[in-house]
Image (cartoon, rainbow, N blue to C red; front, side, top):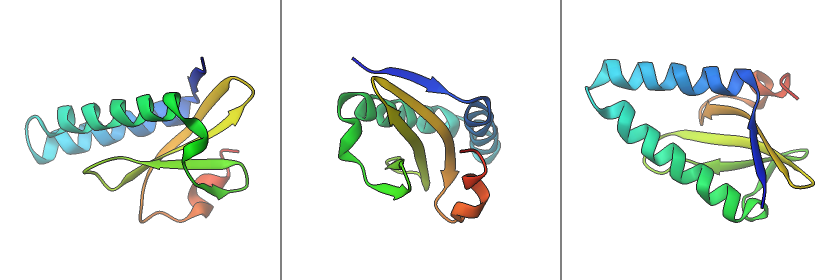
Length: 97
């Protein structure tokens, strides 16, 4: 079983996204949270299934929302480095490595 870790910036990403969606429509942040959690569960079940996008960084795109969960696998540990909008370039998140 894999252990899942989030760097602090990844947690801030989730918080920012949740606040933004809640401002757009009441309850939309809850929908995002459910899709995000489903994405994390998929990563835990099969972490090697998702494409490598940058060096050892893999991305699982979140259903219904234009975001990807960016993560690395090392041994039995999965480290989430960020949740980024699909329009952002790798330059914006590569510095988190």
